[in-house]
Length: 327
Ligand SMILES: NC(=O)c1ccc[n+]([C@@H]2O[C@H](COP(=O)([O-])OP(=O)(O)OC[C@H]3O[C@@H](n4cnc5c(N)ncnc54)[C@H](OP(=O)(O)O)[C@@H]3O)[C@@H](O)[C@H]2O)c1
Image (cartoon, rainbow, N blue to C red; front, side):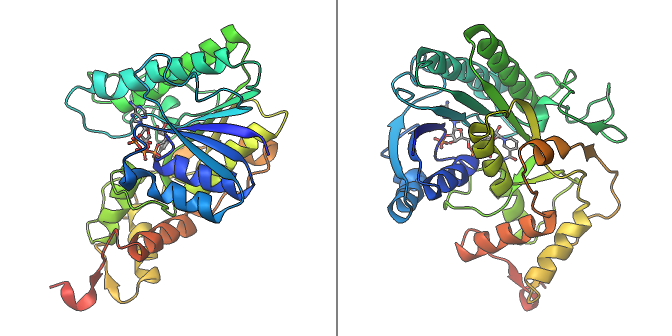
């Protein structure tokens, strides 16, 4: 099987992607910030030991020019997932926007230097590149967003640095791809949930469901994506010759919080969960392109949430309250 590279290999999404690539027998070169950080990489080594593909870890940092050049040598596809994903930062420009945008430029430059072997670059973008969080100009509720939309409303000053980081990084990737003649495909998930493979709990996705499982209902009604679908979409985007452009990989509409607490209650009847709010306004995405063109079947949101909760509990990363502990 060909050699492919995955940036940000120890992250939540990348771990599932590496899992699927190794299961298919790919040789994977994964970049991580530190190979010595066993808390971050041990699960990847365990996956490689158990699955048919092979794994090599290489150190690279988004903010270091040239950092990815050697890592991509001989690779036929680059999966660029690395990007800071957190919502609170002391210096949002320096901590979120710069690493995302300069990092994407560094990754694309490294792909261009290895054009001889690199046939495809698949970038993990986000629906944050399509719509802002508040989005006054194009109301989130009442609009069905598609791949044709770009987030033109988020600003760092307005508290949406993560959204800015994603829209600017994706635009930078398209600009370099066009200039260098690279075949780029972008995947745009919304809030990703689904089984975890690592014992890290610092990923924003994990923090969100861990809070729910431990009895703290979360505000809002997110549009969810399943991590297995997101990873599968990356692989399909690299393998299918006609894959092109942007693909939303997310549910077609938002999930009211009341459903989440109900699904957790059903999955763990012996436990008590704080009830989520019902009847929040609906947000909509058009998700037909990835299903029609890449043949991706999307996982029902209930399954995504229940499966993630099960892995968090099984790995001891979240401890639900038993009913009698509630008082
Ligand atoms: N989770 C979601 O809901 C969601 C939704 C839409 C899009 N996405 C996108 O999916 C991708 C992966 O996110 P995730 O959810 O898997 O988050 P994550 O677990 O926090 O992974 C982020 C990865 O980026 C790496 N990274 C951050 N700064 C870096 C730097 N300066 N140099 C090198 N690597 C750096 C991290 O490295 P370390 O392992 O060393 O920390 C980590 O591996 C991101 O592009 C994110 O924007 C996520």
